Amino acid sequence: MKNIRYPILLLDADRTLFDFEKSKAAALQAAYQGAGLEAVQTYSPEILARYSDINESWWRRLERGECTKPQLQIGRFREFFAALEVQADPAAFNQMYMNELGNGSYLLPHALEVCRELAKDCRLYIVTNGVSETQRRRIGASPLAELLSGIFISEEAGFPKPDVRYFDYVFSRIPGVERREILLVGDSLTSDMQGAENAGLDSCWFNPAGQKRPSQPAITYEIQDLRQLPALVRTGCLSEENPL
Image (tube, rainbow, N blue to C red):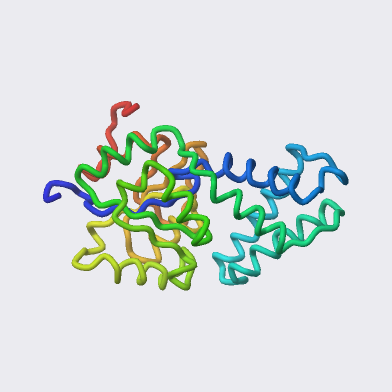
C-alpha cells in the first residue's frame, strides 16, 4: 500500500456500485402487485416515475435532518398512495417493498472488475444511507462481499451521510488511518460529495450522465466510468489519455 495514493476507499453503494434503479423497479412492481393495486390501477412506467420522485424527495429530507428513517419509509408510501388516489397500508407496503429490494444485488457495469482490481492494493469499505437489513442482504449476496473490509450503514451509525457524525463513526472503526489516505467515491452530490467535504476527505464524483459540475460542494475528482478509478487511486491523478 505504500505506493498507493489512496489505500483506503469509502465506496457508496447504490448508483455507484449497485444498479439501484433496476432493484427499485423490480421491488416496486412486486410490492404493487402483491398489495393488489393492479385491480385499481395498472402498474406502469409512469407509476414508477411518480414513486421515484417522491422517494428522492424523502431521502433529501433525511440528509437534511428533517425526518427519521422510519418516517421516510412510511411517509414516502403515504404520499405515493395519495398521489395515485389509491388506498393501501403504507407500513405493510413498505415491508413488502423492502423485502423485495433486499433481493436486488444487481451491479453496475464494470463494478466487479474494478473492485477486484482495487482490492489488490486497497481496503474497500461501503458507506451507505440505506436500510441496514436490506443493504446487508443485497451486499452480502453480491460477489463484492468477499472484497470488502467493512460496511458502514447510516442506520447503525445513528446519523446519515453527509452528517460529519456519520463519518466520525466510520473513522472510529478504521483505526490507524489518516484522512489524507482516504478517498470517498459516490454519485450523490448531497450525501457523498457534501459528506466528504464535511469530513475533510478527498472525493471522487461518479458522474456517468455527464451532469454539469457544481461550484459546491467541493469535488476533488470527477469520473464518468468506474474503470477510471484504479489509475486515479494509485497516482492521485486522472490520466489525460482516454482511460476507457
